[in-house]
Image 1: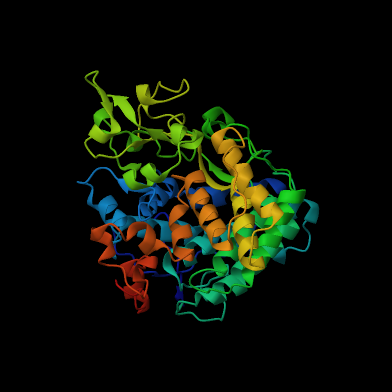
Image 2: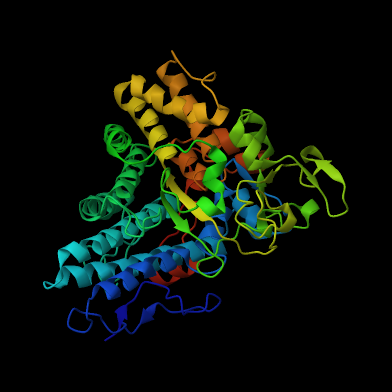
Length: 498
């Protein structure tokens, strides 16, 4: 008997029209697989590869969809896919949308199997199995969190066979965002918090810890408090969770912002709470020539938005993250206003390799589309700013710790305490935290999510006449299109506007 298998398996060709009605894979059960620690570790490590996807996968696709925000823009105007992402005109067959959908659901599929196998095996030593079970819950929650923010209502699958959804439906209807938060994401994160160790099993910032699960939970809470759910009681939960991390967790801000982006220090867990690690031999990133400008003989897929750049304060972050002048391939010195695209280039990741002589801090050997480094997902600075924002919203005014959190981020940015905030109204404080989050996390693929949950897409990018004309009160551009093949196979109606 045929069953619905929802996931586009990685062995399928992306170019083919694959019918997702497939014979089910052989089911792994505690009786058919020996769950040694080595087996559990191997299966759990596979979650990272599922999320990474492939060359020009997770890291690259996050960057492309991040063009929808206001900190990055598309440099190569002949690359239609990036331009359409940038202008919020994403087509229903967009490759970025299709591939991220595939990576997230493949990660969910694998996590479902790990959770099932461990929970059904009564003979496992929980001292060994709990950390792997916790990672599976963490990755499933993280994947669903991306899904609801990119696409809204979506299939909610926890069945290890992916044959039915959480309500036993085999036709996989799209479940409301609220259901996915309350029935999967929140329970999974509470499980992850209980099961994960306080220290990473790999002693770096990639394998999640209980603190990483709490960080993700604080972000989930503050997102639930904003658009589309607008359940403002969750501001208090976000503040409470972030405060626990601030007061009891092992994290701190590193002394120099630039040290966060040095390849030799990518595994440091002082500030990076959770990140996806990359090397040229395993799960490479795509920070190389994609980020080089036309004058540098690069692909200039991504450049800094010039308006965002001009509004960025003149601090150490701005100095490090942007290329404002360069020497072209003919030896000519050119300032950013005279670049072909009229926008500064992105410098932030140029120590990760792939940039050749335009690399920084000694990493100037290799010129390639592939690079190393990490994909940043959560840092301690995020926790500080989540607390500052959430506590101000929950309490109606900024408290002493909220100011301290915001000013810690600013002190490092400017190298002294001369730019601290004090005496702001609740509204002005909220604006200050909003701006600080954008500057602190520039080019880290987080800005779009911030704009959406705070309903500031129109304010931030609507001033661009090419985009503003398509924004409306229904916020149709706040979600991306469901991959068209999924809609055709399931009979779903796509998101409004697509």
